[in-house]
Length: 509
Image 1: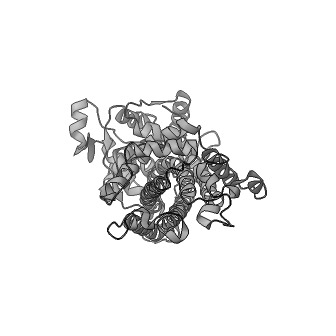
Image 2: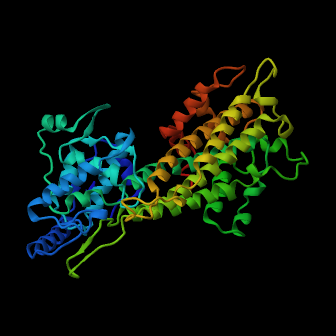
Image 3: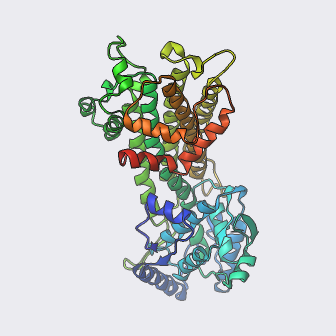
């Protein structure tokens, strides 16, 4: 992967963060830009000019002038003092993504630092020396200061790092792999921690999984529609054309590809007299489609952020300017993370509505709670209860973090974004949503089996068969948690979406 300051996407970041065989190098043009901005900073230092973060204190100490002899000590003190994160560590792949994004932001060439800083991050990545970064402690304003400081701490040979799944002092790994720690020069400590790379990394890795879930939502909804003997009419392309939201049309097309024009189940209820299906079936294009549109909005925000300069001050040697600014503020990312959390909460909610229809004999031709011999057997009674629990938990988590702020740093940093909190809770909302869809897939396939010998469409029969290869039909009660976990694993590992798209081609998001 070439680090050039402008080419990070959700897809290539996910691959690079999760594939530990990926190797990295700095683009020569990016190196040239970095070296030019560093020369400009050093020229200013040689003239004795005062520059924030270069030869002054930080935040509320910005008016304190630091002597040239103490500049390097200033940078180390900054990293040590700001390493105040708490809580569980982010996963190793989250930390890798943060390192990649930090290197990429510096490679834009506006930080006034030596290119050896990016070289050192790349050296750590290539040697699999990944810092342990606490997940709590960022308010998302002057960047992700606390967690990024723990990242920088490892670069200077202090703090903790991952050794496989074990936590060890980074000094142990540096000695083992014969790698020297970084010696910080003027401004370089500050440049390592200014920016939103923690919240952005979390958001991008989450969003990559969201794209899979959006496809699975259409599959799950189609399976439920058939189990409930619903109508295909609401997915006619004429309807989407009258309300041209892109996601609505994509969802309708996906559903039509999965359901085909009809099926034995579809043929069985053509004269049933039912006029309209429940919203959770009929409105799938509108609801699933709106989440798809949210996905694309958030993707654009995160990819823009990933390829931006987020330092302060920023250096523009060609224009002869060093500009103090607020590009480190996390508000764009914070809003996007709250938005995707709200959208995923709604997506899980409509799935739970469909599960509730499947278990209710008043809403279907299926036995109560999807089990024969009801009473002795409870069937999917608590599957729906568990789904309802997760949906309600998501409603709490979906409260936007970005509407909150609290003054910090002696009121110098008086408005903050809480973007990292938004991103962190977004990962839990996603996990809850994945579990809800695992439950819907479990209930929908059970419902389809109860309609036998009637069958659904050929694509949906194949998908049901793939799930049945690992999760058999339940003739009687068993521990359904095991079934849910198995389908959840099929979703998270991408085995399910890979099989689906092998059957029907790539679904639209």
